[in-house]
Length: 265
Figure 1 (cartoon, helix red, strand yellow):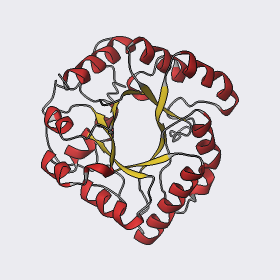
Figure 2 (cartoon, helix red, strand yellow):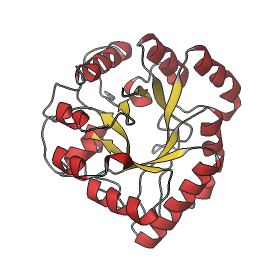
Figure 3 (cartoon, helix red, strand yellow):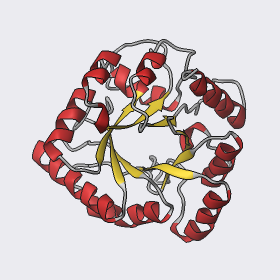
Figure 4 (cartoon, one colour):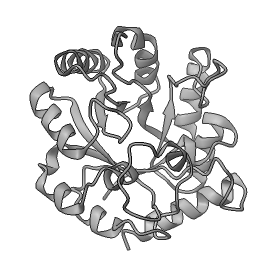
């Protein structure tokens, strides 16, 4: 049975605490949240984070709501940056009982990307964490499923798994048949959302922040989830930052959760 988790950017109301309470009320198994986040153009956090000072109270909240942290974000491999800087946020993720941390590869120097990813895996392993390697059309160092599979094989770290986000899969030319060709044991989690078409693009950030409810677009999501082994975690990631869904945050999140469950019916 797949474990269903709700991503923070699907339900922003109330920050991480609101996410946990909502996920528990919705009968979900976990949440995906941020212990580190990119900054926006004004130098502010782009997404709400769990503050280190709130670690103890947040752990109690998770325990009281029988909720697990499936993914802790965001730990990208970047040019001219060392992943060692993520140590405090990785430690915080481990303190919260997270299962894994998530990375994108923006470094385009292949050797450095592999070295940094290996280092990130070692840091995670020391904290009892897995690493989810997520490919995207706008992370030039790993921008397709095939690139992720190749990098996974080269790094060969036991706690590294591939993440498949439906939007990124289909925006980079991926297909269910390509997913089927990958060793199912190395796919660790899948993120669900829908989209209006299959156009290829490396410039779809706005769409990434404003996705469609599963089943309301054209992505072959039922075919995708049918390929997944039982160990794969499912992350419901359906942000609506523009408010085009025409409903409040909780109603939108309820729609996303219900539609995601229907994929397994």
